[in-house]
Image (cartoon, rainbow over all chains, first blue to last red):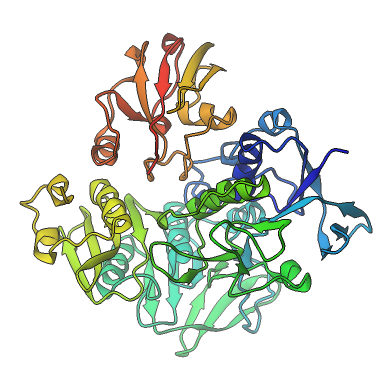
Length: 406
Length: 105
C-alpha cells in the first residue's frame, strides 16, 4: 500500500517541504490539510508591497498550482481537530478521519489578540494573512486617520505602507521606544526619526486603553488620556505559535513545538517546521523560536530528510528583513545578550548604516540599513564566530571586504 | 518561449521552458530546481538565489548597485554571478545556462 505523508498547514515551510520530500525520495502520497483556501503564499509582503498596492495577490504565490500537481501533492481544505498518535490518524472538524504514515506540523503562528475594550468594533484589524491585508486595504481612506497599536516591525511596516497610501498615521508603542525587543536604542531612535520625518506621529510609553465607536472604530483612548481620531486601527503586538494540536497529542512543547536539530519531535513519525517550532540554534547554543521565512525553509528541508530516514542538520543563521519607505533593513543574527553596539556609517543621515552587536568582542548580530555588503559580511562573520575589532567595524576607511578574516 | 538549463553543483541538469517576462528565480521555484532558496521571494534582500550564467546572457543586462553589493561577499562568486531574482527572462536568453553554487548563503 502507498504510504501517506500528511502536512498540516499551507505555510512557507509547506511550500519547501513538498519538493524536498520528493528530492529526498518520498514516493508516497503527500496530502496538505489547511484551513486557508490559498496555496502557500509569501507573507512578508502583506505589510509591505502588498498592502501599499505594489504587489497583487497573484504575485504572492510561492509556487504555482501546476508545480504542486507535478509533485503530486494534494491540498485539502479543512481543520484538524486532533492527532491520534497510536492510531496514526487525524480527526477533522468535518468528522472525517485520515490515516498517516508520516506527519509534518507546519501550523505556523497566529496573532496575539489585544484585550482592550471596544476591540471588536469594525475597522480594527490584525495582520497575519491575506484576508487581514484585504480587510485593512478596504478600510484605507486617504487623508483619514489610522492608529497602529504596536511599534514592532509589523506595526512600523504597516505605518509606512498606510502613509504611502495617504493616511495620517499614529503609532502607539507602550515601551519606551519602538523596536525595543529587537534592536539597540540607536536603531530605535533612527526609525523613530525616519517615521516622524514621513509624517507619522510616533508615541512611545503610551498604549491604547479603549476603542470607541458605534459600529466602526472612531476614536482611540490612550493610557495617558489622549484621544486619537481613527477610521482604521491595526494591531501588531506579536504572535503565538500554533502548538495546541501537538500539545493535545502529548508532544513536548517548549515555547513552540519542541524539535531536535533534525526537526524531529519525540514521535518518530512526526516532524515540525516553521514558526510553530522551537529548536536549539547551533550558532547561539540555546533554544529559539524564530518567526522567519528562511528558518521555515531551512527547517522544511531538514524535516523532509528526517521523514525519509536521512539526517540533515539544521544549522543556518537566523536572518530577517524589513522594508520601510526607501529603507531596506537586513538583519543578520539575533542581538539578545549583546554588550556593545558599533555603528558603521552616519546613523543620523538617511543614507543607511550598519549597527553591529558584539558580545565579548564576537559578532552576534547586525542591523544593516541600505547596507547589503555589511549584511553579507555579518552573515559570514557570525556563522564563523569571528571576532573583528570594534574600531575596524566602525572605520569606513577600511573596505567591507577587508573586514573578512583571511 | 525558450529553455534555460539549471546545473546543480553536482552536475545534475534541469532543462526547463520559460515564458518571457518571468524572473529567473521564479522559473527555478516553479520547477522545483534544488539549490535556489530564494528566501525573500525576489526582493534582492537575501542573496540566496545566486547563479553563475553562461551562454546567451546578452539580454540579462548589468547587475545594479544593490545586487553587486549583495554578490560582492558571496562565497563562490564568479565574474558572471548574478542574483536570479534580478533577471527578467526574455526570448534572447533561450539556451542560457545557470550554474548553481554549492551553497547559498
